[in-house]
Image (cartoon, rainbow, N blue to C red; front, side):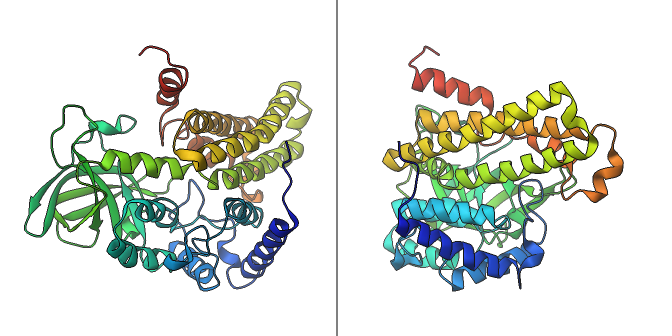
Length: 384
């Protein structure tokens, strides 16, 4: 197995690194390393300005076709950019939902008119998107969703509630799964609609989290109007599964590097507190170090499988793997800090925030239990 990159690919990575270092070492230094998981609601406008800077220089939506504002990058180039971005400690992307989730879905399922309408504002970061999937009684069991859309006038009228909607209070648009008819099975009769957030009938309520931030929101639809159906009516489940597949693409490798950066922070803290000399903690550090190296190869395998055609055992295993790893890293950070809370203000990261946030990793985007069910039933062919 050859895990090296070609000279042309390395030249591309060097170009990306140089651009990011110049931007994040200069006019956008304030957003460097900010806005990641656990603090997605900080410096939103400043991070948006940084992403508009990326767009102006051809570093936004690089994997999209050039006709829609991308640069037609290969998968290898997309991976290398994500790695360079993580190495440069680029800020959390406020446009991620549009660029990484909706954009590829519109390219796959949208009409030409929808591509011309929605893709350029995403590429230019002039419109932000949020994802209306989860509901109070439809999280991991997404097919249990109850939000309804009824034809009326020139489009559909939506009524229902969504929850855990990332950055909804900053979003201009939302792609919403809603039930447009009643099928024999739960996943039938669901459609994907594109909805303007700033209209009568849409209410957004931020959710205050244990970390103190409010990056997630509840969204209420009361006869809100949508005139855009993405994909055929009643085939929203197919659209949703494609979106979930691209969600676990090249950015998984960047996630691996962000975990490695946190691991190095924890290791440095362990040396300061002296915890690194304790045998049990040393074992935990060694274990997580090896698991982080393994995670990169698991992610590469999942990306290859996704590129070949959608979700499968590789993507299910990836989510299960990194969620447990990150939760264990949060617990290690707490163990290492111990009672030395006097060091918190001196550190560049907060072990308590890491501990609290990582408790959610095994829940969102499919709980560990759901991932094991998928692996057992669909991957291994075991009975329900």
